[in-house]
Image (cartoon, rainbow over all chains, first blue to last red; front, top):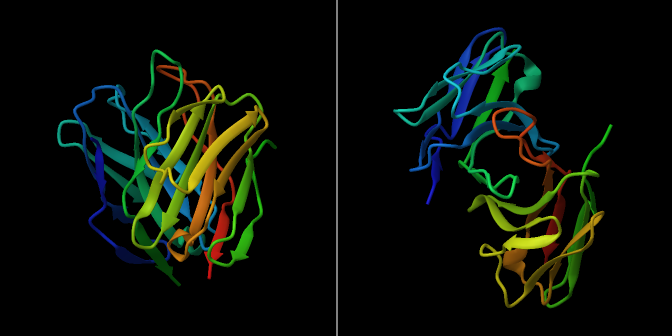
Length: 119
Length: 118
């Protein structure tokens, strides 16, 4: 069974600075997807960034980037130029696809990291 | 702007009552998921469907929970009878057909139903 571990329950960062959130996972699969979701106080789950395991290049989305280390089973999220609106819970998630059925599998989530951006 | 909708957004009920939560997935998505979020357990899968057929409901207490997709535009999650330990936020999510090596292989979440069982 796959597991996802986020070892930092809470973090804080000053506005405009850079912060890195850690995530490790355990799997014997070779094809899978990794995601970071953001959950602000509104509770809405918002996709931040995704990474396909077959891609060696790290994904980037504007101020968000990941450091994907497949051999180490590590998938950290870097937020550059932090903004007050980045304050939220951040969840790392793993997904094993159903390739034959052409469908997504369920997401397995870490416990989350509560990020506070301070002015 | 396509999105997943859930009703009700909030529900307060008394122990023993039946609770029904509804979800309208994004049109054209072939998978629908129900997740539950609690402080203690975090986010966990309850059940999911592919092309309206149940694929996995191993995370759901079978004696009181049931999940169905009567048609492609509606997924329901029922709890009967409800208990205080069922208090949580219940999320529905839907995902498009998987494109191996490309495509938007992500799940889109609804706003959640916050359930409180007294």
